[in-house]
Length: 449
Image 1 (tube, rainbow, N blue to C red):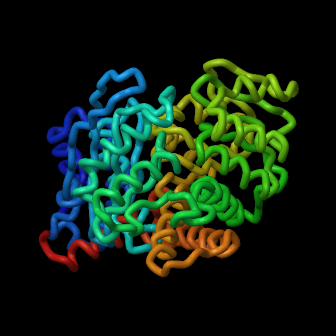
Image 2: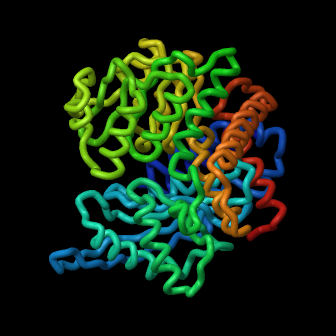
């Protein structure tokens, strides 16, 4: 069988089946584009129709979420949970609350999550959920009422051995707390059915930091393959949520100087870099006061606020996109390469367009896909589940040691898989192949279900 024709025919059928789901198609195409040598060496995956089977989520739940605001007005949002693949364990993946949430976006995220979870080596399947509800501008009581309504339906479909949600964009410890409280009331059961909880009632230390820390650890591992490190490097980060802030923190701790970052309003260029005082101010601004980066520039005169601008034109050696999918385009990638970028570690899911990835790979920039370099969050979520099962708490040092080992293992798995199939040094191909093989083999072992 001609493998190229087989995969081309598969992608053509995908496009015809879900013509409006462009982001999902992009994610599938990226993975399938790496699998030709795997399918050639192991025709069992073609015989067992693994691509066709993995194309379809096991289950998608769609439901209405009615809630009342502080003025007494009723609103109705749409809720989703995409339970994508449970071959390796219970569905695991975040809940996103943002106006851009659609079934297309959540299918893409759940598809990516399936392979990301596979790479961690933890026994976790893949899922994702959320709503087109936006927490920005809402009071605590409004967010609580929405979260309770959301869980009034979702609780039927989740549980410690079934599906274990976590946080994601727009859904942090506050939202997880409200959802868990309602889940506990409805089920009369205190189990680890959510991760991302606060540490004083079942959460893991280092969970908020885990994704960002993992991005920095992965970048450090990539640089080490060239006998280099983060020490003395200039870096830029997009996004100033949990992932962005803690990527900045760990990059700084490992010796890099972060000179650029951004939020919804624009970007900051700080030629002096982020230090301990600036990081503390940034955390308070983002996590407590939910303010704008304009305040950062007002506080620190050396920093320049650039309204409506991204960070990609700021010269750097390390770049970490941590905001959202397709935020970094071909022109941005060319600018980064021209300005001396050596390493790009994705901190969000699919932030680089296919054209941007081609630019980085053709320029021999160290490039890692999100399913590898941002897996630290779900890795520590898995550790949180373990701690809940054992009724114990690990120290920050213990969790951090596990996180570093897991990120190193993912890094090495990517390189090993890429080299085995003739694509040495290609982290994207290696991540796709290593993640796919483990899921595919489990699906074959479990039969046609």
